[in-house]
Length: 362
Image (cartoon, rainbow, N blue to C red):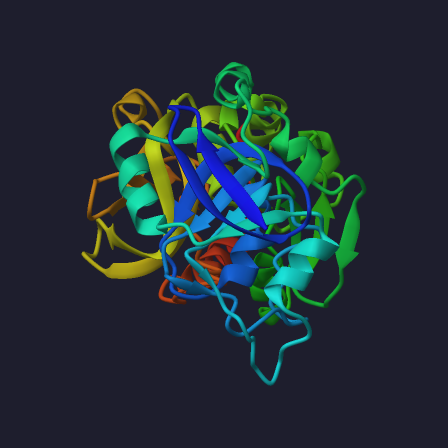
């Protein structure tokens, strides 16, 4: 069955339908990963977006029970060049087509995804729809439509829950967390309490944590203003580590600014340099917003990492409090694990803070 990818600038691409029998509306974004489509589709950072893969063959190893990054995917649609006709892998439970049908997510194949990607890189991120029929008003309706602004609210957990262990206690504030973050913390025996995104500093500190982590998540960080007061209250009390959206919120809470990128970083081939050592890690990234470097000048934040290709701020630390953040995903999934040492660095920061004694900076 035919299906169409329509962009707000009037470009229309025809292909074949797969996945759910439904229409989709969202911002069209592209990922450059050669694999890891299951992890990407189930990553809550893609909430509200139509996800396009530049690698030409997608779905060849199906979907398995181990590689989910969330239970309920919230991306709006999937665009591929070629959908594998036969999926085969010893871990496979079902095909990508069947998985998207189960989760009411439409897909389109037969699209020259690399050509569309070049178009987005030139024009910038665009609103798009997946539809089975083009009408006289399809493009004009798309141009008038507004993208959602409540992605974090629909990605976060609604209730607190624990992932128990006998090690250091971590409160993980969930803005749309990836399960791979929980896996990395659990591998280090952290006793984890996960709290909703609207938690206050008092809520967080009531659990007497040894450290606090701010998770990744979707959308514009300025749409989550309630988190800023929480971060300001927490960073004075215990070590803090932010990832992706958590990194942007940490920057905003300390007086910096963020901006929407032309087309973002999505994939897992992004080289990042640690400024203090010159170390270069290849990183997994998924963000459409970034921290404004100029805005950091009058704050207590210092740039620690930058993207080699475009010098985007990829890491910052607080000059007074034991707090730091990175824009990329040290948990990877998908992608390289070059930067997973940052979880160990967070543990070391907690140990150092314990040795000094918990110091309040009221």
